[in-house]
Image 1: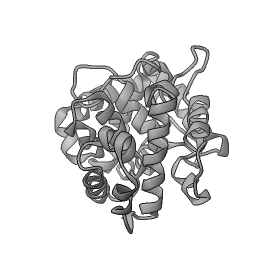
Image 2: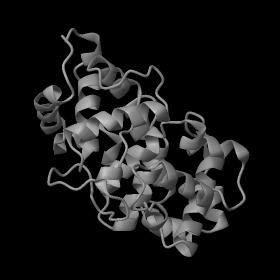
Image 3: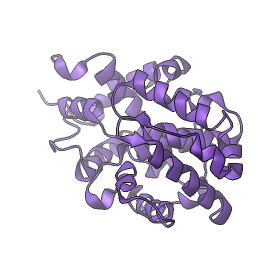
Image 4: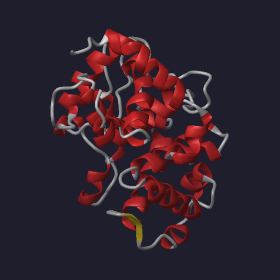
Length: 261
């Protein structure tokens, strides 16, 4: 028998508690920004790690570590004060289709953002009337690519306007914005309300959401994100994205979508 959304709440709340825990950090790319204490280091390292977060998680973490080495383990200082000679040291593959040209542009664009736009938090600001992150991601993309860049690099910053679920950016925004005492998400940004955040929809969370009938759409696109968020907001209107822990944990660690429910 089909369960209503609210009937799922005790089960999903339990799973949030299980996976929204500091032990989660050691298996996830969020461990990269957790290496730092300064706000700018956290947000820059988090943004770069999230930007390459597709594929095997161990591989993502390894590649993010390589990026940190290029940034001399001082992300903000490197972004702001690097020389052309420093950039010449960045060569070859970084992570799958994300290469040295992409990383060099990301560094230059981040420098532009901190020098001319008051930093990442400022340009990821949401307007009060916006129900989700659709428009703020598009505003961010426009600023991120306002300096000269290779067209190929555009694919590494997803666009909701082009129907993408923008999983990686939404994951990064969850890291920066969600506020609780669990020690996983940072909660260092106030430019977006947690109620406006969007679940970083991927294969695992999408399949679990469909299994639970929180999502009917078969594609993992922005339309699916909107449908899922409508249901998650029934469970918690103020902090709907906490259920990302439940959906992801059930999918990755418990193979839930493959089991009977």
